[in-house]
Length: 427
Image 1 (cartoon, rainbow, N blue to C red):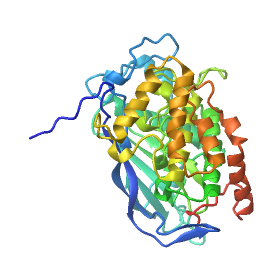
Image 2 (cartoon, rainbow, N blue to C red; image 1 turned 30 degrees about the horizontal axis):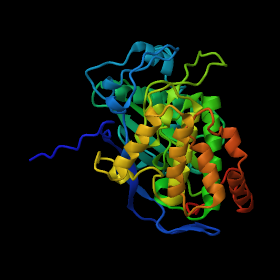
Image 3 (cartoon, helix red, strand yellow; image 1 turned 60 degrees about the vertical axis):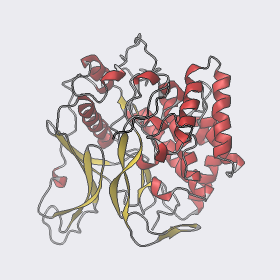
């Protein structure tokens, strides 16, 4: 007999989004005082957090008056309803805009390549690609370093899935053109009608979810700095909001790199948008647990919404727990447990007239979540996770915060390269 979920006035959590987690082990890696046993070698699909569109009852009904049309939340994830063409144009560029740059012939699949499965996400799989011989056939030439290959395959014309594929490719094209050291390096991207292949740098230590809780706050600070610098470049050079920043979407390499990945939920300005065009989106994509208050209200959102997600993610990295709820209980609603308290907090954020009341409710939750953290870490997270986006810290402001300065000092003195983050993932 099927048991019905308990009703909740603010809706029920959406379906879970498959993420990546450890499935087997590798030798110990360490650097300085940061040590991890069994750093990531292989991933397996698991349910990692609530993802998808907000339940209709949790989103305010409103009409768009700006340049970026609001999508009907009832249509998200339903193959019967196509996305409005205007939304695609404004979010992703004109329909005839090329998706990717010219192919890099050196990275085309050849018999010299060996693919090793790493992990599987919602729409595709990731492989480690190693060349057993030089791609160009020169026997004396060393083989190129291994890289990661993401294969995305759609089995239907579901509009939400098509949007994810198109967004991934548009961001890949822009990353391919970028030389920003804190952004993911994309080497090649190829697209078909229902599939795509993206070749990118290999971040072989895996997602930061493997390293939480991270008790060494100097390592947490170094991650925060690298994440903020990458986000600054994403907003500025790539002209995109990530909108799904979480530990599972931040990968580390054993060489010390820490970078954002997985851009399927991004909001991207068109290539022909004016230089001063605001980076604003109105549709709701990504993981609900990381959404800022303005996103929970269904309002337009910009770079400040990504800053909120950074604060939540850093708190989760430091403590091993989501500051507002347990992701493991995301399928419960109205039971008075963690999820019920999360929805209670969401209701305060949504319906309170005073921004100060919203900030007070959020601050109270953070005080409890970060009770065992340092004052400087708590202050950093509070500034990033402010309920009012106008009063929320900016990326530039957080980069000047004393907590991030600890990360810069540790990085400079840790023996790493110019963009190396000291941490338990460093071999």
